[in-house]
Length: 328
Ligand SMILES: NC(=O)c1ccc[n+]([C@@H]2O[C@H](COP(=O)([O-])OP(=O)(O)OC[C@H]3O[C@@H](n4cnc5c(N)ncnc54)[C@H](OP(=O)(O)O)[C@@H]3O)[C@@H](O)[C@H]2O)c1
Image 1 (spheres, helix red, strand yellow):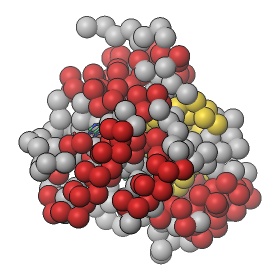
Image 2 (spheres, protein in one colour):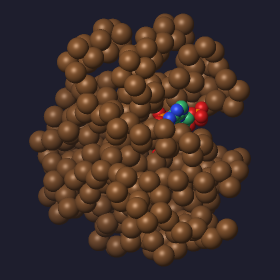
Image 3 (tube, helix red, strand yellow):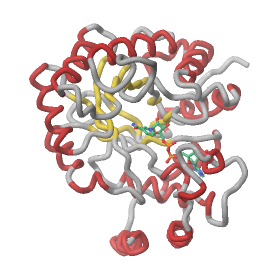
């Protein structure tokens, strides 16, 4: 069936300025790391993407290696874009990345100019796009000069293959060094993509301050700790949940200690009249240095559930203290 986006889609979402740039991003962005590969059902992928866009999510996050198999998330996204979103390219922010292992040999990994430029060319072909809106270096490379990696990002923008650039998984010192080089090159860094959730708070140890200092936006990934910070694992591991795949989230990650914490957090979420997922997302968005929170979803209903966190986004100081006490 042909898809016509909801007329009122922009009334349902709030949009935040990304650092000191001109770009506004939705409070929620959708990532296609999981659930959009060739192993997944394309009808479900479509439903998730349509639901997201119908509710004001304009930003979709990909990477060269998303699948499985690697590359298939971009290929599937490209097909759906063509079929459903053909007339809406100018209403979409599409991101891709390179930095992890993608193809054999010395040019399919890490941070050389050779890898980044050729990988983005492949991503554009897979997605059937002329350009991406944001291109990231996916992880720092200890063996390539940072200048070379940043020159590659700058080149890609000058070639018209990306409008903005970002970095991901860089620690605060590495990030600051990258921001300085990019500024000198005339292609300021738009955004940083770190892992951040109630269970993983390293960004609070200085990275967020650095982003604010340099006027760079922040898009935390795995804000629900891959589903741990939801009501899914309160009483064991349900069939079909990500932990049953034992790939990136393993059954052994659901430790008794974590389950106790999740149950206590869930009680607080119920008292706040929201789901644990909603509370965990609101908790990230409460910091004004966060531009947009990057969620994943295996079903369209999860997108709807997650974004309803905007109905109760604030915390009392007592609630924040309780959360800190639970997290320990
Ligand atoms: N830059 C990087 O290095 C990097 C690394 C990882 C991810 N990312 C990006 O971040 C995105 C999000 O990562 P993520 O998928 O780990 O995020 P997440 O939001 O922490 O986890 C998503 C998973 O949580 C469950 N879930 C989501 N909403 C729910 C809800 N409302 N109620 C109950 N369960 C819910 C689903 O699990 P089930 O599948 O079990 O239903 C879903 O697949 C990725 O797609 C990718 O774009 C970037």
